[in-house]
Each structure stands twice: as structure tokens, then as C-alpha cells.
Picture 1 (cartoon, helix red, strand yellow):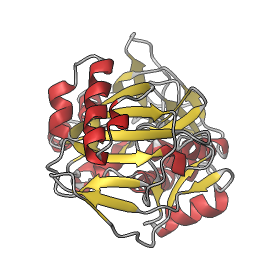
Picture 2 (spheres, one colour):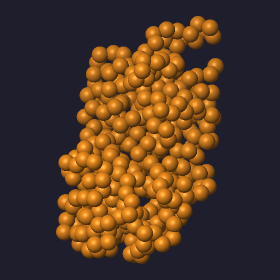
Picture 3 (cartoon, rainbow, N blue to C red):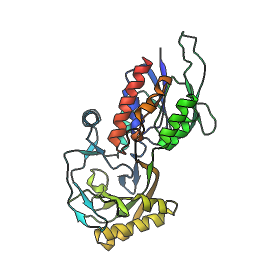
Picture 4 (cartoon, one colour):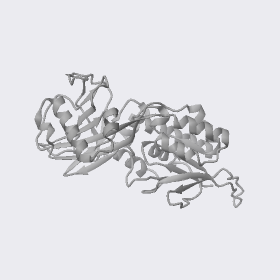
Length: 355
């Protein structure tokens, strides 16, 4: 008997779950609100450049994820060799520690991680489909003698029903997942507890400014990170350190701004955000050239990084009904490898339940 599984969200967690289900009898359908995959591990292309404007790379901190990437998903893999240095509230730059972990992306950008995972599955991906509700169908399938009273029906923002599924995996950011849970009819006690637990996961809002320059630089680091969290810039990195991303003789900086700065300017025009970010980068580098990029891009991340995780025991209460959760907010750390690992493990739990 074939089981149907719906995955809401084609980020690293959703891709990991689909990959974990690839050798089961499950027919997997993924509903993704955007035109691409990999969520906040996002890539854009502009003026001959490829740049990761959300998550910058994947760390090798998790052994299972590291083996999967370096062995199975290694085609086009790019390793960043340069170290990460630090700076403080005064803009004082210091040599950092270049740990033993690898820093990976792909020649075509970090979205290649999810693309490679999905390519190894038979999952159907429905792009530009925003799921607004997930409701219980409340019926059994008697054609093959199976009891499917706990089936789930996603519904999009236009009210279209998107099929019926034996299990539903919800991977959007916690506030959006909490809204979906409100429609699931999991029972007042379980549903209210889940909504409260998931809704309590806080997020940092972040603006990303992409700044391009028609000249090359050669500092001894790939990126700078603000360690005291007192600077208006949280992180600035060099995309030219990634093979295949930036033409020779050019510089492309990814400036991820501090949460307070980002919240204050979140609704400002993109050009104003980029100009203000470039001024700060010029001050940090003590070089006026960086205040005048020749082209820019801006990305607004309302839910950039989770500040905490959800209680696994509370989330598990829904699994008996066929509703699962995965993502970096489940583990409480905004890291691609954590989201992927959590997706793999959740996919395996879905497989066990269906069996």
C-alpha cells in the first residue's frame, strides 16, 4: 500500500525528510511558497555573480550530515579555505580561530544542497504554493481495508484543497507553523499546547545587504563576525572566496546587519538600506571605497534565526496523529546542518510510523 506524505516547505529540513523517505513506499509531495528550494539557505545571481545571501555555508559539525555532503552530494562542492576573524563594538578586527570544521557551499550556490537531495528522490515539488491551513479529513479509506481516519488535507491561500495525506510535515518558521497548527484539529488540549509551545519560539529579524565592487581585495580572512553583539554589522563575508561565485578582479560582500539595526530599518527602501550598510562597512574596513558599491541587493529576513528551540516532548504529541515538525527552530539553532539533520531524523520517524 502506498502512503502519501505532505511536506510544507522545501528548505533544508524538508529536503532532508524527503531524502530519508526515498526508499520507502511513501509518495511525497512538497509544497513550497517560493520559486526555489532550500529556504533561508538562499542563492541569487546578478551581473555574473553567484551569492549566498542567507545562510553563507554549511558546517561539518554533524558527522552524519558531513558524510552525506562530502560523499553523496559532493558534485560541485566548494570548500571555503580562508578563516573567520572577529571584530568588536569599536570595529577592532582580531584574528579569529579557524576551527577544524569544513565550510561548504556549491559552485552554483548553497541552494544546490536541497536541489541535490530532492534530485535523489521521487518527491513532487509544488512551487509558489503557500499552505494556509492543514485540516483533518475525518474519513477512512475502505477500498483496501485500511483505516485512514487520521488523514490531512493542506489548503492554500486561495482555498484550494491540495490532496489528502497520511502524514503532514510542517517546516516553516515557528510563527507560521503555529498558525498552521491552529487549523489541524488535534484536539483542544494537544492543539493549544502545541500552538503555545511553537509560538513561544522567538526570532531575530535581519537585513542582508549585498555590496559589489569593481576591484579585488586580499585580506587574510573570508569573513568577520561581531562577537560582542554591540556593532550594527553582525557579519560580513567575501563571496569571492567561493570558487565560481565572483569573477576575478571583483569583490562581493554579504553584510548581515544586527537585529536592532534591522528592525529599525526593516521597512526602509532597499537603496537606503544598502547605502547605510555600505557606510558602516567602509567604517569597519577603514576604507572609503566600500561606501560606494557599484551595485547592491537587499534581502529582508523577518524570521532569520531562532532564539530558542521547542520542547521535543510537546512536539511529539502530534506524531501519533500523523503531524510532524522539523527545522532549525525545532533544535533551536539557526544552522543549515542542524536543520538538515533534524529533517533526516524526522523523515525516518515518519517512515517508521507509516510502516
